[in-house]
Structure formats: structure tokens, C-alpha cells
Image (cartoon, rainbow, N blue to C red; front, side, top):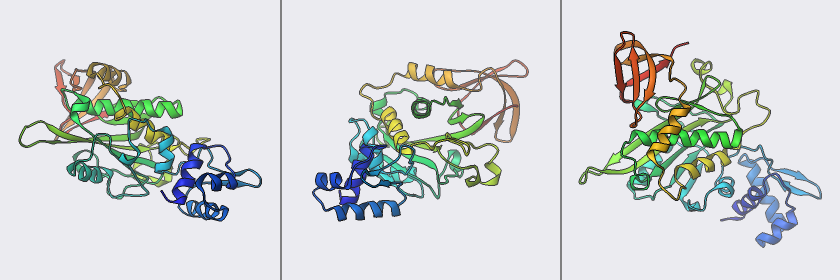
Length: 327
């Protein structure tokens, strides 16, 4: 690491506390002037660093600038630091992660960006990815998860993200089947699971788990057509801003930093407990067909069990299906 990265790592490790320029210089074996230049460069790249005479430098607790050095203090030792890549902006974190997976990247490799220009959701739909969000993709190896149903991976991710958000904010997100998270009736997160099958064996080769969260996203940064339906973990009127570095680490720890494989039964139970639609009236869209139904439950594979108006029960996989909550 260069001096700028080392200074940032030290400040992040003591986030909320002041470190003197002398202390930084002595620890890093550089001059005070080198520390001052590093601070100046960090500020130019968007880092909020406070300076107080006779106290030194400090990154405040609510600074939300994304950086590897900001993630490391919260990251599980099970995830190597060199497995995490952080970018100010990318076209698509999933696309970058798929390239790394094809090149043999190990389980737990993560690509994280503060913005995306070409984010994609299900069915290649555009996924709006403005500033203030957290966009990350994690490479998972199926043998580390041992789920018999691929839908359980999406459920596992949804629960992990809910728990991570709850850990840093105290807020309790709900899940809209199959892959969206909501707070206060507004969507705050979308999850996209992409898997590649080994041609020779027919088994899963790897999984890329894409996660996009509106953390500190302002209403004005959403396109006008989304402003009534999209929300953020820390909305416009929030008294503080969320720490995206800590949230990224919390998600990585839960999705890839475990020592024992997660149990599918426990994952599905946790997923079911957070579903916002069970017992509710919904509208189902299958291609050109649309009909009302009542969402009853999910089965062990994560498929949605519905009852239509004539009393017929149907079990739906994700497929080309959209579920809309009825007001």
C-alpha cells in the first residue's frame, strides 16, 4: 500500500477518534508533510476527514465513502482482504464478478462499487444505481453452500442482507418474493442471482450474487417514475447517514464468511418469517395473463403457493412471473 492508503487504513481503524499527524508519521515511518499530502489527496477523492489543531485527523462515524480500507476493520478473517475489490463506479459489478469467476476467482471474491452505469436486474431489466447506494457482487461456490435448490441461494442472500441492514441500522426490512427488500412500503434493495453450469458434469460451476441497496440515496437522485416506490435505508430526512463500508462487510461476512454451511431449512424459515405478502391479496402477471390471488406460503424450494379466486391452489417458481401487492 502507498502512504495515502496506509493513512486511510489507520484512520478507518480508529473511525470516530482523532489521530495526530505525528502519530501517523511515526507509525508509517514517513514525514509529517507526507501525511498532510495523503490527507489532501484523500479529501480530493471524497473522503470526509476532520482536522482539529492539537488533536489531529478523524473520519467521522457517519462518513459513507466506500473504500477497501473502510471495509477491512469490519471484515471477517475468513475473507482475505485481497478478495475484495472496491471501485468508485463500474458499468456492472455482476459483469465484473462473472469475468473474475471465469478466470477462477475463489469463493468469497467480491466486487463493490459506489455507482453503476449499466446495472441490470431480472430479465436484463435496467437497475437504477445512483450515488448513495451500495452495489456489490459476491462469487459463491456451490460446494460451500450445499443447497439442493438454486432458489435457496436467493433466499439466503435476502435474509443475509436483511440481517446486515438490521445490524447497522436497527431497522427491520421485509422481503417481497422473490428477491426485493422493502422498508416503510418502499423498495430499498434488489438481488440478482446468476449461476453457470459446468458443461461436462452438469453441476453448478459458480454463482454470482448481485446486490443493490439504496443506503443513503436521495429521492431526487431517483428517476421521477421511481420516486413514489423507491426508498432508502437512510432516507432524505434521516438524522444520520449510513456507513456503507460497514454494511458491505456485514453482508460479506454473512454470505461468504461463514465457517459451517448454512442449513437450507433454517434459511427458508428465516426467509418465510420476513415475507411481507403472506396472507395478502396480490396480482400475478404471467406473460400476457394477469389474475388476482392470495399468497399463502412458500414451499421448501422457495416457490410461492397461491390460491386463486376460484379456490385453486398454484405453486409458482420465479420464472417470467411478477407479483404485485394490492393496496
